[in-house]
Length: 289
Figure 1 (cartoon, rainbow, N blue to C red):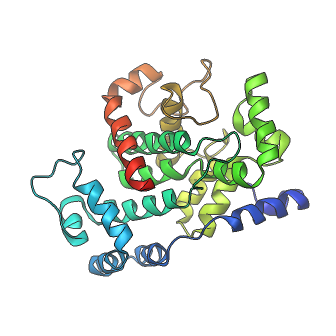
Figure 2 (cartoon, rainbow, N blue to C red; figure 1 turned 135 degrees about the vertical axis):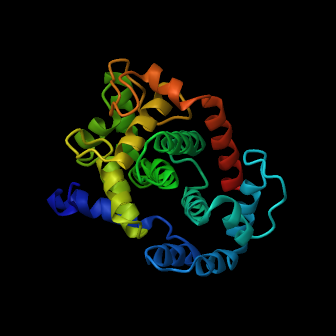
């Protein structure tokens, strides 16, 4: 991961100021993060924290009682949600809603927040499915959160460095260069670094911060989590799910061959992509409400 101290001093100050300007997570979610980092934390303690946040509780229950999960009985409490879906899934739903709540209410110039959100949510759903296909100890819900947050640095840059980001998008459109390369050329750092800085501020686990930082670094060491996010991001861009501001290039190869050597075979293993689109749209609607 590129260290902030290696950046030009002016760029470092601008990025730090932009990251500090982003909303903090609600106290309840900060407490969830703190408790979930404790190996022997009783599940009831996490449930109690979430249930004290009525907005968070309402959104979690709306998702769980949606047609997507198709549970046989209506779920009325967070504790019941844990019984049906597991503690980690409910915890990550709370974290995901907090992340969505941190998005700007109005679109920054030349940046469509809703299309960004659909891309991020689609990437999250695909990353979770790719994790499900692996015979490893990676929790698929962790891949979902990493997929959801992998591009959050774009939001920071578009909102707080708007003139520079306008130039970046123009460079991508006119010269067909990858977005992260255009960011480094114009700003001196890319959205992966900025997203990792924000994830650190939000006190996410080290593995997640590292994944966000490395998702555009071809020299980064392969991990299951990183490969899930990279390939899911490529699939989402290839299928034009939302808008990543980084068009898919036909010359691209899968960032990992864990699931196959070409995108067609990977998509065949992933299954009906419309299911992930539907889930992303549903979550976007509930999260923004």
